[in-house]
Image 1: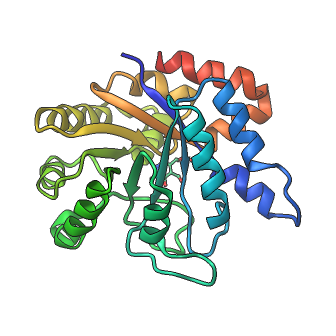
Image 2 (image 1 turned 60 degrees about the vertical axis):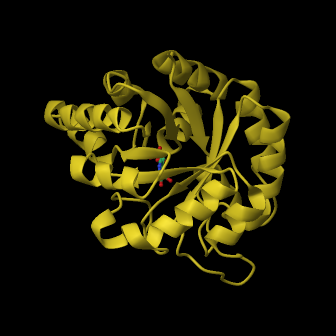
Image 3 (image 1 turned 90 degrees about the horizontal axis):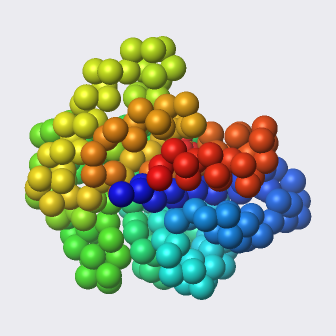
Length: 249
Ligand code: PXP
């Protein structure tokens, strides 16, 4: 089974936002990557709208609706409230009705996500949020470290999937000592599958570390932004997409 590739658009939005105007045009870029064969689009809106803006959401959702094989995934911290014209994470998700919502525990001012949920602390807070999103037909995934006890708790709070945080795996890979952490991800994915949770993964995945990460069983989707954007600067967008799709086939 091939693994779905969801492209995170944050970095493209970041470049756009660095100047007035609309260059690069996020929607045109999204159209291109859909035409090149990705199976998902991911956005991670933040209250300060430093990359994805609330106004980006509807056109991207409509694009995904035109391509039923392409899923729209919105990720973020469910506790983030409204700020200026940012409506708050949950109101934004409810209005957009994506295929998947990935809940992430990061603080609003964090440069990027860097840990999974501690569900001992936040499980009871998340449970009604998960129920509410699922009642609206939105699949809910929780950003998690490969910790078996925490993954059991993800099932208890009734998540549909987990997204395994791969940052530490990628770091270990770059240092050539990733076998132990890869085994932890394999065990985490096996447990998740056994108890009825789907498995996604993401953060710092790239063309080098993906080949071995592909040995993690039951992977449904990876979401990739940073490395994909950098690779497309080097070898162009079509070749980059082809290379990632090949790794995931
Ligand atoms: N998953 C989550 C929850 C993230 O926050 C990010 C970064 O926005 C990614 C995946 C993608 O990470 P990267 O940009 O390193 O590929």
